[in-house]
Length: 196
Image 1 (cartoon, rainbow, N blue to C red):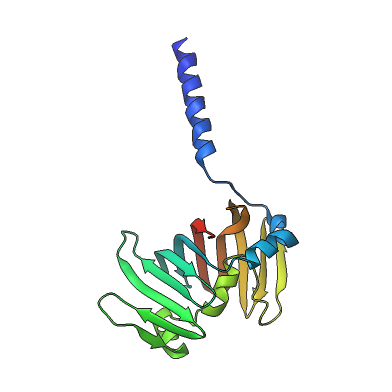
Image 2 (cartoon, rainbow, N blue to C red):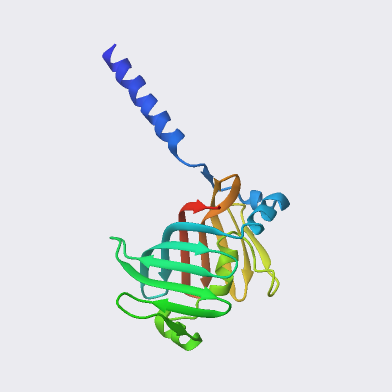
C-alpha cells in the first residue's frame, strides 16, 4: 500500500512538472502558415532573453543575452554566465554602437565589428531571422527542409535553421535559431519571449 502511495505521489509530481513547462516542440510546418507568419511580421516591439553561442572552427563563446527590439533600434545586452555585463550593443539605422564595462559608447564600422567579433555579424538581419522570417527588404531566400525536422532558409550567404518553437502570447516563435556560414555558427536559444 505504501509503495502504491509513493508511486501515485511521484506520478502526480511528474504531471505537475510537465504542466508547468511552456509549450515547445519541433514541428516545422507551423511556421509556413501565412497567419503565423503575419503574426510574427506584425511584432513591432518585443524582447527576449536566453543564451548566445558563437562558434568557429577553433573556439566557442557562450553568453547570456537580453535583446530589446523596436521599430528603430535593437539593443543586445551580453552577460557572462554568472551575470556580469560583457557588452551592450545597439544597432539603429545602419549604425552600430558598443559599450563595454567602464568604457564610453563608440560607433563601430565593419572593420571594427570584424576585429571585435572575428567576423562581420549580420546585425541588420537578426531581428527578422530570430523570429523565423527572412529579411524581405533585401535578397531572395531559399527555403530549406531536412527530413521535416528543421525549417530554415538561406540569405546573404547565411544558412538560418529554426530547430525549436514555442507559443508565446498566442504567437508561434522560434526558441532555437542556428545561423551558420562556413565554420562559423551563431546559436540563439530563447528562454523567454516578451511580445508586448
